[in-house]
Image (cartoon, rainbow, N blue to C red; front, top):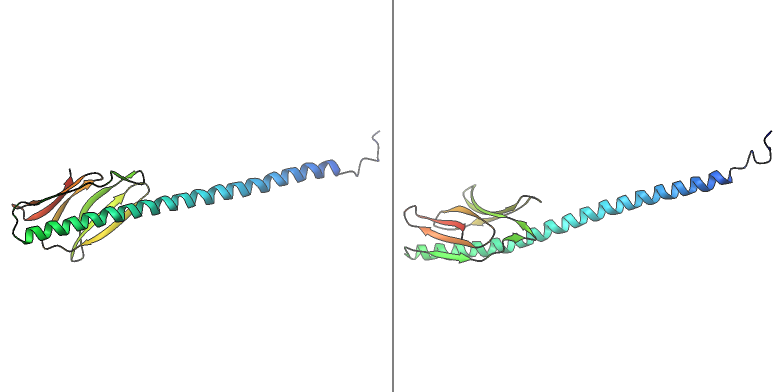
Length: 152
């Protein structure tokens, strides 16, 4: 026969149950913290990429404006080189010219993470072409009557 004195004793179960519950709560808290921190870091990375693309884009738009003014003043040969970073926050990017509503846009974009920055181009001379990050050259193609953006 079993002793009846210990039949109603649940203290050993309470300790084990408390331990398991504490582990469960800690696991939920750690998973939540890791998820939140991961999202925060990715948001910060996208912000850094966007900020770098804005700086690069502003330089290229200024160079396109300079080249356009040289063409408008009658120059038959125009070439402007710009040294820009090959990557933005460690991510490669592309530069391209797109047609928009009534004009053109200079578009800088990355793939992973997907970040795109657009700049309106206000030029008298049409602009074409594209480049990857790194040294960029803007040449005037007098036969086509347009400025061409390309990798140098």
